[in-house]
Length: 320
Image (cartoon, rainbow, N blue to C red; front, top):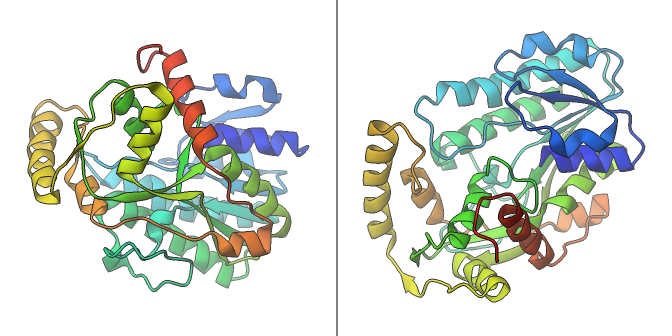
Protein backbone atom coordinates (compact mmCIF):
# COMPACT_ATOMS: atom_id res chain seq x y z
CA UNK A 1 0.00 0.00 0.00
CA UNK A 2 2.85 2.39 0.78
CA UNK A 3 3.88 3.05 -2.80
CA UNK A 4 0.27 3.71 -3.82
CA UNK A 5 -0.18 6.18 -0.95
CA UNK A 6 3.01 7.97 -2.02
CA UNK A 7 1.75 8.13 -5.62
CA UNK A 8 -1.58 9.64 -4.51
CA UNK A 9 0.16 12.28 -2.40
CA UNK A 10 2.49 13.08 -5.30
CA UNK A 11 -0.45 13.57 -7.65
CA UNK A 12 -2.03 15.87 -5.05
CA UNK A 13 1.07 18.07 -5.18
CA UNK A 14 2.82 17.08 -1.97
CA UNK A 15 6.57 17.26 -1.51
CA UNK A 16 7.49 13.84 -0.19
CA UNK A 17 9.99 12.46 2.26
CA UNK A 18 9.62 8.70 2.30
CA UNK A 19 10.78 6.09 4.81
CA UNK A 20 12.21 2.84 3.48
CA UNK A 21 14.20 0.04 5.04
CA UNK A 22 17.57 -1.02 3.65
CA UNK A 23 15.88 -4.10 2.20
CA UNK A 24 12.86 -2.28 0.72
CA UNK A 25 12.13 -2.43 -2.98
CA UNK A 26 11.85 1.18 -4.11
CA UNK A 27 11.46 0.91 -7.88
CA UNK A 28 7.79 1.93 -7.59
CA UNK A 29 8.93 5.29 -6.18
CA UNK A 30 11.37 6.29 -8.91
CA UNK A 31 8.99 8.71 -10.65
CA UNK A 32 8.11 10.69 -7.53
CA UNK A 33 11.21 12.88 -7.16
CA UNK A 34 10.95 12.20 -3.43
CA UNK A 35 13.55 12.38 -0.70
CA UNK A 36 14.24 8.86 0.57
CA UNK A 37 15.13 8.24 4.21
CA UNK A 38 16.56 4.85 5.16
CA UNK A 39 15.32 3.67 8.55
CA UNK A 40 13.28 1.13 10.43
CA UNK A 41 10.30 1.13 12.80
CA UNK A 42 12.34 -1.13 15.06
CA UNK A 43 14.59 1.89 15.68
CA UNK A 44 12.06 4.74 15.51
CA UNK A 45 14.05 7.23 17.59
CA UNK A 46 16.45 7.52 14.66
CA UNK A 47 13.65 9.08 12.59
CA UNK A 48 13.46 12.33 14.57
CA UNK A 49 15.43 14.37 12.04
CA UNK A 50 13.37 12.94 9.17
CA UNK A 51 10.26 14.60 10.60
CA UNK A 52 11.87 18.04 10.83
CA UNK A 53 10.10 20.49 8.54
CA UNK A 54 7.20 18.16 7.70
CA UNK A 55 3.63 19.51 7.70
CA UNK A 56 2.08 16.05 7.90
CA UNK A 57 2.95 12.47 8.73
CA UNK A 58 1.27 9.54 6.98
CA UNK A 59 2.13 6.40 8.93
CA UNK A 60 1.27 3.47 6.69
CA UNK A 61 4.09 1.11 7.67
CA UNK A 62 3.50 -2.12 9.57
CA UNK A 63 4.78 -5.63 10.09
CA UNK A 64 1.99 -7.48 8.25
CA UNK A 65 2.47 -11.21 8.67
CA UNK A 66 0.14 -13.91 9.89
CA UNK A 67 2.98 -16.08 11.17
CA UNK A 68 6.14 -15.03 13.01
CA UNK A 69 8.72 -17.08 14.86
CA UNK A 70 9.20 -14.35 17.43
CA UNK A 71 6.27 -11.94 17.82
CA UNK A 72 8.31 -9.46 19.87
CA UNK A 73 9.59 -7.78 16.71
CA UNK A 74 6.03 -7.36 15.43
CA UNK A 75 4.90 -5.61 18.61
CA UNK A 76 8.06 -3.49 18.60
CA UNK A 77 7.39 -2.27 15.05
CA UNK A 78 3.62 -1.95 15.15
CA UNK A 79 3.01 -0.73 18.71
CA UNK A 80 6.19 0.82 20.08
CA UNK A 81 7.10 2.14 16.63
CA UNK A 82 3.74 3.88 16.30
CA UNK A 83 3.91 5.30 19.83
CA UNK A 84 7.38 6.73 19.20
CA UNK A 85 6.51 8.14 15.77
CA UNK A 86 3.52 9.98 17.22
CA UNK A 87 5.71 11.44 19.97
CA UNK A 88 8.39 12.50 17.48
CA UNK A 89 5.74 14.12 15.28
CA UNK A 90 4.49 16.16 18.26
CA UNK A 91 8.02 17.22 19.15
CA UNK A 92 8.74 18.20 15.54
CA UNK A 93 5.59 20.32 15.30
CA UNK A 94 3.95 18.16 12.63
CA UNK A 95 0.42 19.54 12.24
CA UNK A 96 -1.50 16.49 11.02
CA UNK A 97 -1.09 12.72 11.22
CA UNK A 98 -2.88 10.00 9.32
CA UNK A 99 -2.40 6.58 10.86
CA UNK A 100 -3.15 3.58 8.66
CA UNK A 101 -4.67 0.96 10.92
CA UNK A 102 -6.60 -2.06 9.65
CA UNK A 103 -10.10 -3.43 9.50
CA UNK A 104 -8.62 -6.27 11.57
CA UNK A 105 -9.23 -4.11 14.64
CA UNK A 106 -13.01 -4.24 14.17
CA UNK A 107 -15.41 -6.44 16.12
CA UNK A 108 -16.22 -9.18 13.63
CA UNK A 109 -18.72 -11.92 14.40
CA UNK A 110 -19.01 -15.53 13.26
CA UNK A 111 -22.49 -14.96 11.81
CA UNK A 112 -21.09 -12.76 9.03
CA UNK A 113 -22.86 -9.62 10.22
CA UNK A 114 -21.60 -6.45 8.52
CA UNK A 115 -19.72 -4.36 11.08
CA UNK A 116 -18.79 -0.70 11.27
CA UNK A 117 -16.71 1.62 13.42
CA UNK A 118 -19.28 1.51 16.23
CA UNK A 119 -19.46 -2.28 16.58
CA UNK A 120 -18.26 -3.15 20.12
CA UNK A 121 -14.77 -4.64 20.23
CA UNK A 122 -11.96 -5.25 22.72
CA UNK A 123 -8.44 -6.66 22.75
CA UNK A 124 -9.89 -10.05 23.73
CA UNK A 125 -11.59 -10.20 20.30
CA UNK A 126 -8.27 -9.99 18.49
CA UNK A 127 -7.00 -13.30 17.09
CA UNK A 128 -3.25 -13.65 16.71
CA UNK A 129 -0.29 -11.34 17.09
CA UNK A 130 -0.89 -9.26 13.96
CA UNK A 131 -4.42 -8.28 14.97
CA UNK A 132 -3.43 -7.73 18.59
CA UNK A 133 -0.49 -5.54 17.63
CA UNK A 134 -2.60 -3.44 15.23
CA UNK A 135 -5.32 -3.05 17.85
CA UNK A 136 -2.80 -1.84 20.42
CA UNK A 137 -1.18 0.49 17.89
CA UNK A 138 -4.57 1.95 17.03
CA UNK A 139 -5.19 2.61 20.71
CA UNK A 140 -1.95 4.61 20.75
CA UNK A 141 -3.30 6.75 17.90
CA UNK A 142 -6.68 7.22 19.58
CA UNK A 143 -5.04 8.21 22.87
CA UNK A 144 -2.77 10.70 21.11
CA UNK A 145 -5.84 12.31 19.53
CA UNK A 146 -7.56 12.49 22.93
CA UNK A 147 -4.49 14.28 24.24
CA UNK A 148 -4.80 16.95 21.55
CA UNK A 149 -2.67 15.67 18.67
CA UNK A 150 -4.40 15.79 15.27
CA UNK A 151 -4.55 12.10 14.31
CA UNK A 152 -6.98 10.59 11.80
CA UNK A 153 -7.25 6.78 11.69
CA UNK A 154 -7.94 4.84 8.50
CA UNK A 155 -9.02 1.19 8.54
CA UNK A 156 -8.55 -0.39 5.10
CA UNK A 157 -10.23 -3.76 4.63
CA UNK A 158 -8.27 -6.16 2.38
CA UNK A 159 -6.37 -4.15 -0.26
CA UNK A 160 -5.68 -5.77 -3.60
CA UNK A 161 -3.82 -4.49 -6.64
CA UNK A 162 -0.41 -4.16 -8.27
CA UNK A 163 3.03 -3.74 -6.65
CA UNK A 164 2.47 -6.28 -3.83
CA UNK A 165 6.14 -7.23 -3.86
CA UNK A 166 6.31 -9.16 -0.59
CA UNK A 167 3.56 -10.43 -1.25
CA UNK A 168 1.22 -9.66 1.64
CA UNK A 169 -1.06 -12.42 2.98
CA UNK A 170 -3.76 -10.97 0.71
CA UNK A 171 -1.53 -11.16 -2.32
CA UNK A 172 -0.57 -14.70 -1.36
CA UNK A 173 -4.17 -15.78 -2.00
CA UNK A 174 -3.84 -14.58 -5.58
CA UNK A 175 -0.36 -16.04 -6.05
CA UNK A 176 -1.37 -19.45 -4.70
CA UNK A 177 -4.43 -19.50 -6.95
CA UNK A 178 -2.37 -18.63 -10.03
CA UNK A 179 0.11 -21.37 -9.15
CA UNK A 180 -2.72 -23.90 -8.66
CA UNK A 181 -1.96 -24.30 -4.96
CA UNK A 182 -5.56 -23.77 -3.89
CA UNK A 183 -7.06 -27.28 -3.97
CA UNK A 184 -9.88 -26.49 -1.52
CA UNK A 185 -11.45 -23.63 0.39
CA UNK A 186 -13.09 -22.92 3.73
CA UNK A 187 -16.27 -21.04 4.47
CA UNK A 188 -14.97 -17.55 5.16
CA UNK A 189 -15.31 -14.09 3.75
CA UNK A 190 -13.35 -10.89 3.16
CA UNK A 191 -14.03 -7.35 2.09
CA UNK A 192 -11.78 -6.71 -0.91
CA UNK A 193 -10.87 -3.15 -1.83
CA UNK A 194 -8.83 -1.54 -4.61
CA UNK A 195 -5.53 -0.42 -3.09
CA UNK A 196 -5.64 2.73 -5.21
CA UNK A 197 -8.99 3.72 -3.70
CA UNK A 198 -7.51 3.31 -0.24
CA UNK A 199 -4.42 5.32 -1.20
CA UNK A 200 -6.47 8.21 -2.54
CA UNK A 201 -8.38 8.47 0.73
CA UNK A 202 -5.15 9.20 2.61
CA UNK A 203 -5.16 12.57 0.85
CA UNK A 204 -8.82 13.14 1.78
CA UNK A 205 -8.11 12.15 5.39
CA UNK A 206 -5.31 14.72 5.63
CA UNK A 207 -7.55 17.42 4.22
CA UNK A 208 -10.86 16.80 5.98
CA UNK A 209 -10.67 13.85 8.36
CA UNK A 210 -11.80 14.42 11.94
CA UNK A 211 -9.11 13.89 14.56
CA UNK A 212 -9.65 10.80 16.70
CA UNK A 213 -12.14 9.25 14.26
CA UNK A 214 -11.77 5.86 12.55
CA UNK A 215 -12.84 5.36 8.95
CA UNK A 216 -13.32 1.94 7.34
CA UNK A 217 -12.20 1.94 3.69
CA UNK A 218 -13.72 -1.07 2.00
CA UNK A 219 -14.97 -2.46 -1.27
CA UNK A 220 -17.01 -5.60 -1.86
CA UNK A 221 -17.98 -8.15 0.78
CA UNK A 222 -17.18 -11.53 -0.78
CA UNK A 223 -16.85 -15.10 0.40
CA UNK A 224 -13.54 -16.78 -0.31
CA UNK A 225 -15.32 -19.01 -2.83
CA UNK A 226 -16.67 -15.96 -4.66
CA UNK A 227 -13.16 -14.48 -4.84
CA UNK A 228 -11.76 -17.73 -6.24
CA UNK A 229 -14.60 -17.97 -8.76
CA UNK A 230 -13.92 -14.44 -9.97
CA UNK A 231 -10.24 -15.19 -10.46
CA UNK A 232 -11.21 -18.36 -12.31
CA UNK A 233 -13.41 -16.35 -14.68
CA UNK A 234 -10.58 -13.86 -15.27
CA UNK A 235 -7.85 -16.43 -15.89
CA UNK A 236 -9.52 -19.58 -17.16
CA UNK A 237 -7.96 -21.52 -14.30
CA UNK A 238 -10.21 -23.90 -12.35
CA UNK A 239 -11.77 -22.73 -9.12
CA UNK A 240 -11.60 -25.29 -6.30
CA UNK A 241 -14.88 -27.09 -5.80
CA UNK A 242 -14.11 -28.84 -2.52
CA UNK A 243 -15.02 -27.09 0.73
CA UNK A 244 -13.26 -28.36 3.83
CA UNK A 245 -14.43 -27.90 7.42
CA UNK A 246 -12.48 -25.51 9.60
CA UNK A 247 -11.42 -28.46 11.75
CA UNK A 248 -9.67 -30.08 8.78
CA UNK A 249 -8.07 -26.79 7.77
CA UNK A 250 -6.92 -26.30 11.36
CA UNK A 251 -5.24 -29.71 11.44
CA UNK A 252 -3.42 -29.03 8.16
CA UNK A 253 -2.37 -25.57 9.37
CA UNK A 254 -1.05 -26.95 12.66
CA UNK A 255 1.25 -29.46 10.94
CA UNK A 256 2.25 -27.02 8.17
CA UNK A 257 3.13 -24.39 10.74
CA UNK A 258 5.09 -26.87 12.84
CA UNK A 259 6.98 -28.60 10.02
CA UNK A 260 7.46 -25.71 7.58
CA UNK A 261 7.75 -22.91 10.12
CA UNK A 262 9.33 -24.40 13.23
CA UNK A 263 11.49 -27.13 11.73
CA UNK A 264 12.37 -25.79 8.26
CA UNK A 265 12.34 -22.13 9.25
CA UNK A 266 10.20 -21.07 6.29
CA UNK A 267 6.85 -19.27 6.17
CA UNK A 268 4.03 -21.85 6.17
CA UNK A 269 1.33 -21.67 3.52
CA UNK A 270 -1.39 -22.19 6.10
CA UNK A 271 -1.33 -20.92 9.68
CA UNK A 272 -3.42 -21.64 12.73
CA UNK A 273 -3.99 -17.90 13.14
CA UNK A 274 -5.35 -17.57 9.60
CA UNK A 275 -7.75 -20.48 10.08
CA UNK A 276 -8.97 -19.06 13.39
CA UNK A 277 -9.51 -15.70 11.72
CA UNK A 278 -11.38 -17.44 8.92
CA UNK A 279 -14.14 -18.52 11.27
CA UNK A 280 -15.34 -14.92 11.18
CA UNK A 281 -16.42 -13.35 7.90
CA UNK A 282 -14.71 -9.96 7.76
CA UNK A 283 -17.62 -8.08 6.17
CA UNK A 284 -17.63 -4.34 6.80
CA UNK A 285 -19.41 -1.11 5.89
CA UNK A 286 -17.69 2.04 4.59
CA UNK A 287 -20.75 4.26 5.07
CA UNK A 288 -18.98 6.60 7.50
CA UNK A 289 -16.10 7.28 5.10
CA UNK A 290 -18.64 7.85 2.33
CA UNK A 291 -20.49 10.44 4.42
CA UNK A 292 -17.52 12.27 5.88
CA UNK A 293 -14.63 11.83 3.44
CA UNK A 294 -16.43 11.53 0.12
CA UNK A 295 -15.32 7.92 -0.28
CA UNK A 296 -16.82 5.80 -3.08
CA UNK A 297 -17.15 2.03 -2.88
CA UNK A 298 -16.11 0.65 -6.27
CA UNK A 299 -16.22 -2.83 -7.86
CA UNK A 300 -13.04 -4.70 -7.02
CA UNK A 301 -12.66 -6.65 -10.30
CA UNK A 302 -10.27 -4.11 -11.94
CA UNK A 303 -7.97 -4.26 -8.91
CA UNK A 304 -8.10 -8.06 -8.91
CA UNK A 305 -7.18 -8.01 -12.60
CA UNK A 306 -4.32 -5.63 -11.85
CA UNK A 307 -2.98 -7.92 -9.13
CA UNK A 308 -3.13 -10.96 -11.40
CA UNK A 309 -1.37 -9.13 -14.24
CA UNK A 310 1.32 -7.74 -11.95
CA UNK A 311 2.10 -11.07 -10.29
CA UNK A 312 2.35 -12.75 -13.69
CA UNK A 313 4.47 -9.98 -15.20
CA UNK A 314 6.88 -10.07 -12.26
CA UNK A 315 7.47 -13.81 -12.12
CA UNK A 316 5.32 -14.78 -9.14
CA UNK A 317 3.17 -17.01 -11.36
CA UNK A 318 3.26 -18.43 -14.89
CA UNK A 319 2.25 -16.11 -17.71
CA UNK A 320 -1.29 -16.47 -18.97
